[in-house]
Amino acid sequence: MADAPTPLEVDREPRDGTCPRCGAAELRAYPVVAEQGWVQVVKCQHCLHSVSREPWHRLGPIQLLADLV
Image (tube, rainbow, N blue to C red; front, top):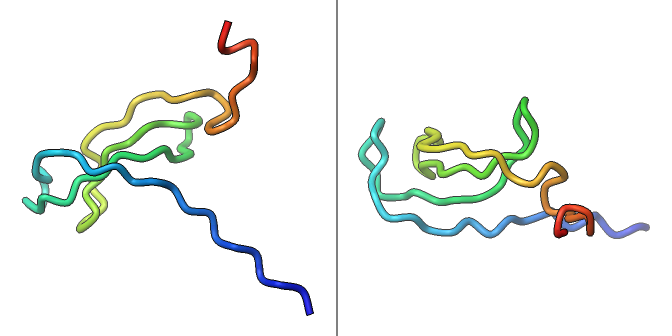
């Protein structure tokens, strides 16, 4: 019997502040794939409201050497 794949986990970095929607002080920053590609978001971990969304690397966690030049 094959082992079940391990779930991927993303480090969610804590951010200062409170959620403008629910008031919880549980903000975390992490990358996600959205309609426009990879974005770095800050989301409330209580109600999942997006506080900010900024474009990230075009291939997410994969960096090409051409992108570093």
